[in-house]
Amino acid sequence: MSETDDTAALDLSIAFFSAVLMLFAFVAFQLARTPRPEPAVSLSQPDIARPVQPPTWAAVAERGSWSVYDGTRLTVLDMDAITAGMRDVLNAYDGDDGYQTLTLHDGADPRSFSLRLSFRPDALPAPWQGEVLAPGPDAPCPETPRRLLRSYVAADVADVTPLTAYLARCGLTFAPLPLRDPGESGRVTVQIGLGPGSYAAEAIFR
Amino acid sequence: MKALAILLALLPLTLCPAPLMADWTRTGLEFHEQTPPPDPVVDRTRVATQQARRCAGSSIRFGDTAAMRGGVQADWDDQTRTLAAIAAMADSYDTASEALAATEEDGATLDSLSVLTALQFGQPVSVPTEGLAGPMLADRLFWQAMTQVPSATTATWANDILPALDAAFQADPSSFQVRAWRVIAWLQAQGFQRASCPARIADFADRLLDLSEASACPLMLGHVTHGIDRALESRPETDPDATRAAWRHFGEALLATVAGAPEVASWRGAQLTRSPDPCAPLMASELQALLRPEAAR
Image (cartoon, rainbow over all chains, first blue to last red):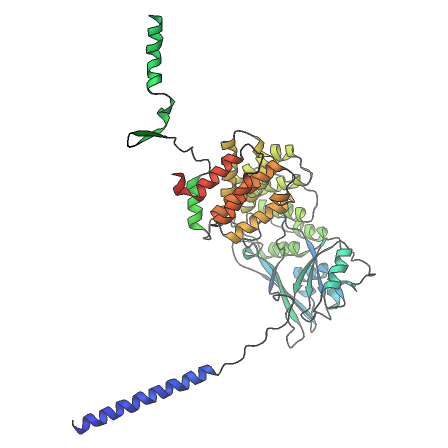
């Protein structure tokens, strides 16, 4: 056996053992698991985008009012103020505590739009506040003529039973829409829209 | 002589009697009669097609208006579209109707939107259909039917609502809401009291297969049966009308067959055997044939 053959065999064995060592290193890294983050406690999935007329089991969708619940107060939104802002941008409220933007979507359907509302759940802009109610056993009922009340519920509200009991007493249908945690600005943004995607297959009568 | 003539005349009858219709097979020296299976009442081809296609998409659309289903094209300016968005967001009928009235556009699409908005707010409204065709007409006929639903009797369902929905289906076969309500209206109109058993079963099965044509997914058909339960305000088990309950059992079994849940279909089919309805045996045998096609052959 020549000398060159010896060195080649030596190189090969060193290469092999270092490969095995590297493998051990990777296996060792793989074993050091990072703990899974604990899932955040919430009522349900946060609300991202909401069809303006969500599916009910009726043939023709029912119109409702919109409201925000922060744990103690139920604020029925003044939709006339918000629609005035949709009609003319100069009338739209714009401040640190909230703003609104309307986007008309291009597409086959002329009705497609989305309305973004950004607000602090515990301190809504004054023009948007319609009725402000304190749900409780003796509280007066909302004066909204609509039977369906879609309510955005702040992320830190753990219990909505006082609200459901109150609305049931008043003969209103409760549709809770959990909000996400507010960002650094303290605001949370919701999107209400209408588009072909609003009619998912399970909205069966549409 | 006369007796001979009668005998001769009867001879063909005695030699080849009624079993001419049947097939005969021979086992050894014995001949066995095999009566041919009855003509299929439920369309086997459609069932097989839907079973194969299952959750794949179809040309049927779920939008609430012709425009949302892509059935008509409307080219609105931004002002009109903004006003339509305001009408959609408003929570009072006055705001919504004022916004729609303020538009400068004119046309059937906007008229349809005004009608639909009024219906969503529960306002009384007349639904004109003159001069319309296709998807627009289908929408109007559907809404006309829906305005009659709250005060409908069985006669109204049979004489007004069901024909209107059938006409809407003819005008626009791509509308899902029309297909769904054709099934409900048939049950409400007691379509199961008319015609012969095979004709009734074929009619009902056609309506159900029209409905499941949109998507034969188990989840989708679960929503469909739940929607029918909500519209009829009972489950099949708690339906006060025993005959209608039998037809609903058959309907759920047929939808389960299409969705690929034979165990649900057999369970529903088994409930048919206790039904007093005269068509129940034929419904059960049709289900058996659909569930075990090789045994029925």
